[in-house]
Image (cartoon, rainbow, N blue to C red; front, side):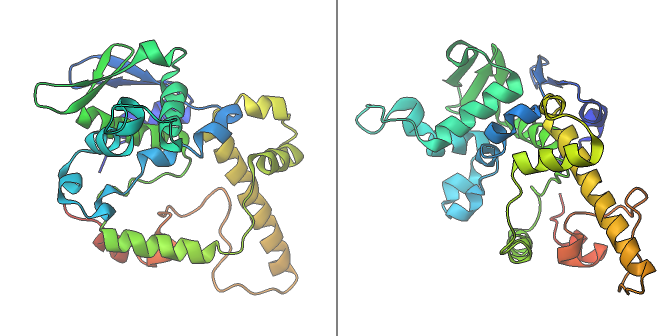
Length: 266
């Protein structure tokens, strides 16, 4: 699993992350702002495709970068079998949006380049800095940790366990209304007094941290009022500030021991 510890301070105080590549070059990863959340959120799944589900041995054994460029985006980048480029797919635009937002590229045609190295493998050049497949794996994790509040690396989780967790949360959220960015902004503004224009200039990570804090406080106050009026709960009401540390998967697994079994030994 990726060790986020050296980068945690950058994330918590909204600073760009200086990532040092395997060639000892530094490239900056910038946090996404709330104003760009509706571009980022629908796009970051391009970094999270489970290629092992495809069932092709060559794809399973390939790096994610190789898979992304050779399988998912090949026709977009190089044209079909006849060499003619069709209109770009949604996958292409998702990938471009991620690059533009997270590396702050203002001229994608000049700042982003794909080459094939002497081993026949795809490599990226972003702002003239070489990004190989291992760098790309690390950058994916940094983008997720930097911009998705509550993200946990499940790269090494057993596929069957991962599928079971996805099914669990699909059932839990079935029938629930999706809370839009506009609605989240309204809720935070109503409970904090922070204006919409100020929230839009926050990093999306910090905005979501604030939104979750507001929701936790509301839940706590409501539940304590219910308890004060004779309501009963199976578990003690957890304080919205001083909470037990637990994984987002804890509800699906129940116990920490079960969660640990879901991860492969590295």
